Image (tube, rainbow, N blue to C red; front, side, top):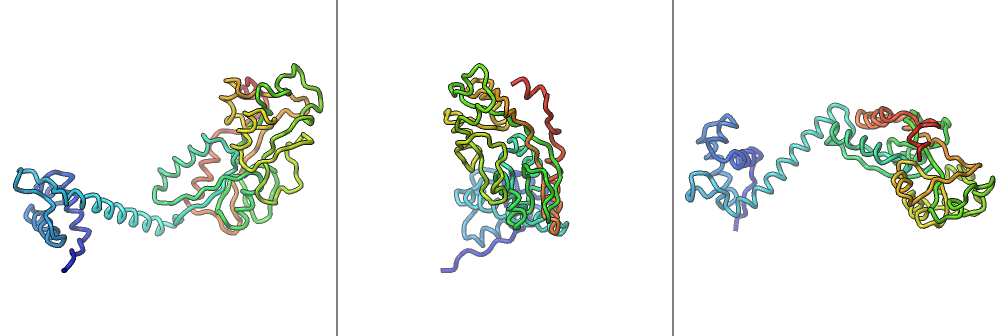
Length: 310
């Protein structure tokens, strides 16, 4: 038994146009061809497949057969795939990356991430994006070892050999705890009170910040590698810790968390830097992401009403 033949892209294009326009005459007008050519193309496609695609007898308007409806979905998938291939090829000819890999500091506010990603999707719809969320020195390490092409990292604010960096703003950090935590219940905490209770600390998956205790005050700490895990532990009253304001703003307003008044720990600005390797600068798509982050909100400064009002 001889199987069906292989349709051409032109046959599929004609088939889809007939379906979308609703008639052979309309398809001929849309494609700038004679109606007889459209009819002949569909007849050849049906002959190749071995079954009719349209029921031409029951109505003047060509109606898809059951087999035709099945073929329709596959035809759209094939033509959409070809269109994506052509768009990607055009992008490569223009020097656009085949894909972009990046690592983002998990302290980066979700609103900034979503803004950048939506803009990237609109500007470079054919470029795949691979994202990792890390904390502290892990972002830097991933960029340095070539695992990702670009990154957005936090402190420390230092130059690193082999990397180019660009300041892209900051996020305010505030010490918080559950409302029933001793530090939250105290009318006024004395100097050193923060050291007497468990502090939930975000720790580094890499070894770049090994030996550095950024913002660690307590003598007893619980360390987690994920910011959402830290957030969960804080809500449950297991300890206290510093969190980015955008992530806990609603909890502070609702009373699920309390901003702590600690004489020796007031929080502060957590600065962000877009980075890439000096010897492999990003192409147009990667550069677009960096510039999008750079064009977002300005640096937070102590005294900003949005933070002080919490």
